[in-house]
Image 1: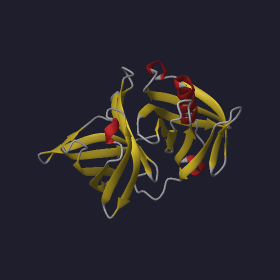
Image 2: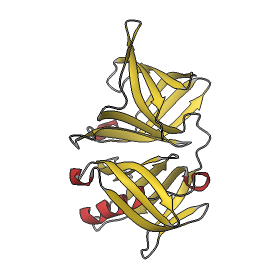
Image 3: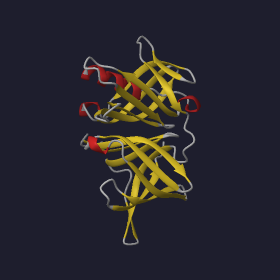
Image 4: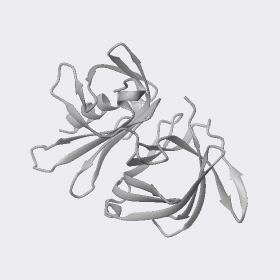
Length: 237
């Protein structure tokens, strides 16, 4: 079953279609032999994607991987940047043939089908973001986003996921995600899975946010209750 789930996710994150039809979030449900219902969510931005499988009831994290994608005809190619199960995939390219409509994605020569959750709206933070700095004691400390150690946050119109990883060492450090809203300057995360602590599933965190010169300033308190003031920058294609 684990191999099947790994194949499912590697297939999913290799899906790239023209931006106007693929950007957003997609989902698929499977039921393995033990009866648990597993949910896989794929989030696409114009150039990056992430796919994650977790228990739809308990939030238990199963697997996550992702990277950049490109399309040539109906052949989709992903360059893997992180994989929670198989670090050997990092840096490799994987290609699949796909068929897409406005509401579904199907893998050619398989019975895998994924349904659209959203098309990149209504949230105001759709895109792939890299943590580029923190503000501590009123002083901004910047971070080089080109370095191998990355913290990336990918958002559709309603879904979010953060991922911490290193493209040089191929290490996967952790991830978490779920749904989000942006209302009146308030950004709210509703956590559905958290790789390091399943008990965080079901929690909601509220932050203040603003966009300044294209950067996302994010202030509030972490899931541990620690104050934070982060700066995120849109990732270049």
